[in-house]
Image 1 (cartoon, rainbow, N blue to C red):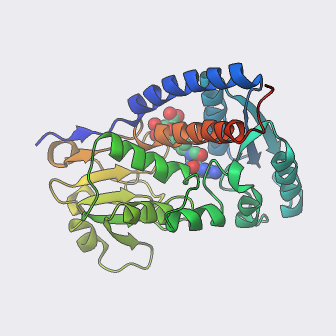
Image 2 (cartoon, rainbow, N blue to C red):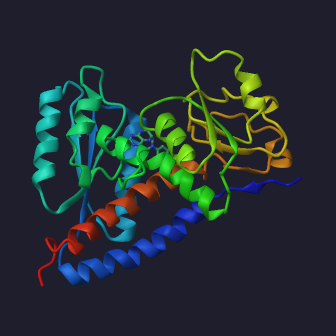
Image 3 (cartoon, rainbow, N blue to C red):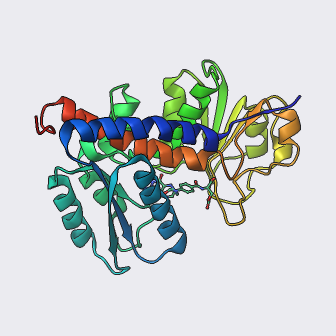
Length: 287
Ligand SMILES: Nc1nc2c(c(=O)[nH]1)N[C@@H](CN(C=O)c1ccc(C(=O)N[C@@H](CCC(=O)O)C(=O)O)cc1)CN2
């Protein structure tokens, strides 16, 4: 069996092409360039790269960006004040607070301060709750990107035995909930899970969202499974050992070029949606 490569890079390029047209139409109608505000706290080099990738993507589709960089010793109160001012700024249609923030900051309190209509990265408890209840919200960027990739490849998730390894609030938990919303039978595995290889061996679809390089071994995965690797580590390594998966899985995401680009294009796409929402509500037009 030759697996389908779930190519997030090429799908993202297609998504960006259509976003470019949408953004230019919106700017023509409103005279306003919608802005994604990015907040980077501290000096983590990988985070700085990811934020710059988001800023670059804004520019590729014609969105504005406002890059805010705060020092490592920033307090929760200081960060909350920055978010408050971005919430009040009408030209800002999306707010991205890069994870992780330094340990003295209450990250979830800061995420939750983001107005729901600007939560284009899908990090608020409110947004997560709405998504879980089947109501509209912008989904967490990485799992939403995975869902788009699966939908593009017409993967029917109903009844599939899906195993998500990892339970972070921006990745594992929303991923599991989104799969459940599509009627998959979902198991979440984590650091206390017993018999991990055995659970994974029964998965029709496996998502690596654990944040440890090659933690999930290829030999644990059954032939014909769909394999989604949401990990990204130096040297182009994911959470899942690739080994023979290209020959014996049904489909798999490459690293790089799979889930990562979908994360970025989903964030940008949700920012464009937020800008259109404001325009359609009648508050964002000069006409
Ligand atoms: N607030 C958030 N913080 C973080 C998120 C997030 O979705 N929201 N996700 C990760 C990191 N991340 C985005 O922030 C991210 C990581 C990697 C990639 C990516 O496209 N990687 C490439 C390879 C890298 C390269 O080309 O240099 C790939 O996989 O092809 C995108 C986004 C943590 N924090």
